[in-house]
Image 1 (tube, rainbow, N blue to C red):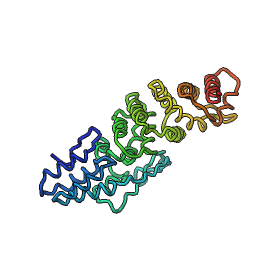
Image 2 (tube, rainbow, N blue to C red):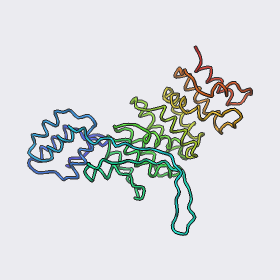
Image 3 (tube, rainbow, N blue to C red):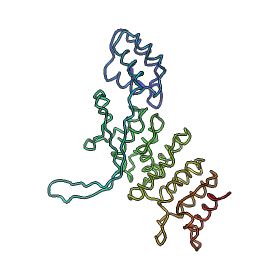
Image 4 (cartoon, rainbow, N blue to C red):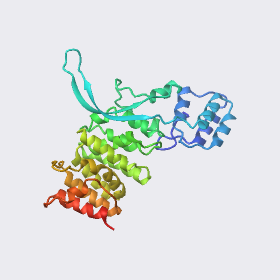
Length: 325
């Protein structure tokens, strides 16, 4: 058995199991890549006693395990996230063209061993197709890092049936920070063309909500950026958020929409966005269920507009809820 054989469906390796496997090797050193993968699959928090016992093993791998545990494992690299307009060219003599893209950049620690450093490096020029299948299991304690790799292809596959969003649902079952990279993979999935793919994004949100790990306000901010960039359609996101509300995640939906609504609401004299009425309905439903209160900039002005449109009706319903008592 390889040292790195997972002991959990998430891809993690139990520290006790790793100690036992090393002990069974006796004085034989394990394969270097196998040991490195096993270390990457350890959970974020490991009992310090594991390091003490690992040092007693008669192999260098034991000391490597001890050092890894005492050092806290692989430090979570900082992922820099942005939405940018990127110019592309098909080659010499071709007219350049522009495309809005979600970009994730990572600057790996130069002190990392090369196999690990390679995993912490984002290379847009390399074909990453197929890597998404195994990345959540290779890096089960580093969700932001996995998400950064997924962002290389996911924004370009929002009308595909390739099942790419399914890997987002797998990724969130792991450990590690949940930041803008993870949230943006979910937000992109909510805006996917195919309902089956959107269902995987909803599953990812439910997983994080149940574990108390969903940064809902961040989700709202990211949704606005992607909607404004034309990468995600408001109508698709609204349907997904309505499903989440019906499933019981109304507190998280309200927190997300409380952050998203102010920039999505029309200013005086501005034409409302298509689908805004339906989004306001979801917000009002979620706020009523969650007992939402607080100021939503711009809502009072929309609620005060005369007329019997869905936007006006739902804006008034939401305004009554957030200002009640």
